[in-house]
Length: 463
Image (cartoon, rainbow, N blue to C red):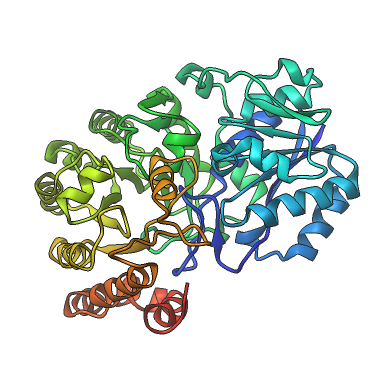
């Protein structure tokens, strides 16, 4: 089959490929990782594949429709967002009617409410809950819908919802072609950027799932690869992909390991063997704020550059409320050790978790300044459907019409004002000024485009 994988157009700087969907203040774009792995598997199975990531390519609705129509796919796969869901379903319906093709809705956001989303469509007949690589390949091979696990499909006036399949094992993941090669062949890698990584960079995963898997706000661990699941590729397979990137993609300046959280044991093993094999390409990863100093020294020796760390809140009770599982003290020790090891930190904080007040938000902001990471992000707490966070907020009536948190003692407007204040406090400080003086290109001149978007949002523009 000719299979077209589509991340549809929506708003400028909208990103649905991360662990939540939002309009980026920094014009960041992550790779369509789940579509990439599915596309690589479909090619491995003998299908002809095209990947269109409209947001990163700045394609509007007309341009996207023209590209898809001209390619004439037999099967259209649409990766949906939460904020863009109505838009995504409408695009999928319109293209399905125009092309008279098989169409499938996929992705973690689709998996948060699969039956409801598929019922919203008028022409799309299929959806896949959870991992969709194998299900798409089986559908493209002509298997009967009733035999394909994870598949939802229209059966007359009802939606049939097949049984779940086991999560893909490490052995199965080792059989996938390298997603980095697939991205090289299908995307312009210069369209993908984030303030904390060298440009251009590229994404890969060494395993699927999260060894912690309990944070109440996390989309992927509650809707996609659920719970304490961390299925790992073999280290040999990962090292071979890193070597291929280093040798075959000289334009790539760093690799971002997109595992939910690279555990201490996994990071140490990967680092020791990467060093031993003399694979020198820089890399970054997601990590919990509890890696050991010994492991981080190994990571630095293996040319690890940056850790993406979810600190979330500086208030101990809020950390308990969201089941973060790491204490303030542990994260402070981790931060000091990361700096001792010579690793950079991109810190993620969120304003608006249950229990948030003006006082706890200010505590988080002050804590972020004391920790002084290299770069920082202050999100409005993203209430993703399918998570315990969303269930609790909906039950208590704590959601706006747009699905944002709004508490009796801390309104949505106050949450937004606190997030703006957080950005101003961190980035318009003497600490950031010193960083800009020390590294003017990296912290200032290379980010002029980002600042042109971020500064209005920090002061007067709603985002």
